[in-house]
Length: 138
Image (spheres, rainbow, N blue to C red):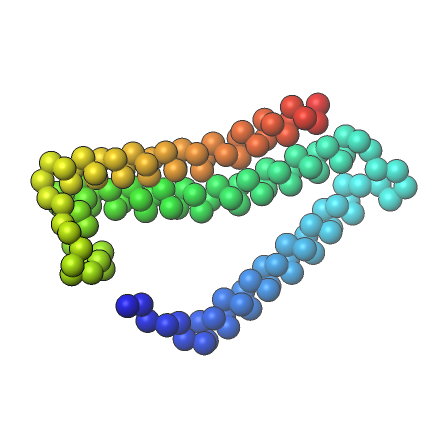
């Protein structure tokens, strides 16, 4: 069973998120005020802004995917090396059936492959979004 978080940790997390959120809003407003003309916004400038926002959002979405993929690859390597599913120390219940030997190695290789797929998609996601945004804007 996991230990509950202490309230100071949650408070620090909340304050950090508020500070970074405020900074993001401030820099976004500054960037938009410098890029756009107040009288007549250009179609090219708006297209550039849409492309940049799409790139930023997909990069922010891709970073956690890469982290999750690395963790899944780590779990797969532990399964492959120990030849046991679930690997020792993972926190499963005592009643959980254990898979040993070649079958567990195969599961480990499969889990490492899925982790690699996650890492690759997390890295390719911003590139694909940039190419798609360029195709629609141009």
